[in-house]
Length: 230
Ligand SMILES: Nc1ncnc2c1ncn2[C@@H]1O[C@H](COP(=O)(O)OP(=O)(O)O)[C@@H](O)[C@H]1O
Ligand SMILES: [Mg+2]
Image (cartoon, rainbow, N blue to C red; front, top):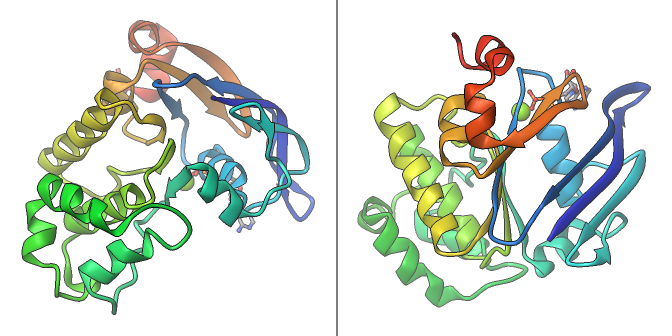
């Protein structure tokens, strides 16, 4: 579904990604594991078009999309949940969800989102800024679902959440995959990410330095030492 070849990106003269190649097959959940500053967020931003690439190719369902505007990519079904949720704080929960349909999707998907996250339904008229961190993450995920994603890009959904909430959020991510959504997941909680992923890539200072089946990465002594705290 997604094929990335030799991708680069830079902030001014400082490279953040160099020669990144990866693929995500239809229906897969692929995890990108890497330390703080490795370039994970930059990678997702380049894929959604909000950060320019300095070289390389991005193909989605066979089309070269590397120069397309973000809105066009959303219309293709590439939908990002940004790091730090980025909900619209003064807007109601319901209006945040409607914002998800700006470029793609249908308003009546809201019924599905309510069913998935009853707390969002209960708080639908509250300003999103008054929600807890976990609830805001659910809202950011719900907003993305409103756009009917074909490829969901998730940036650090577990950031700042208690272990209980991390389990809940990752459970929802695994359920979305089970229902057929293709997912590219970035998370510093490498263990939780690899536990629900099919495959994974290791990103180090902007370069892919390892890849494999998620189960194999979880057993790899070097990965365990560097990313799993063992
Ligand atoms: N807006 C920016 N301006 C300049 N440098 C940036 C900017 N955003 C990120 N960087 C740098 O790019 C590198 C990769 O950052 P990022 O993609 O946010 O990594 P990660 O998401 O893996 O923590 C880091 O060295 C970071 O300092
Ligand atoms: Mg990041």
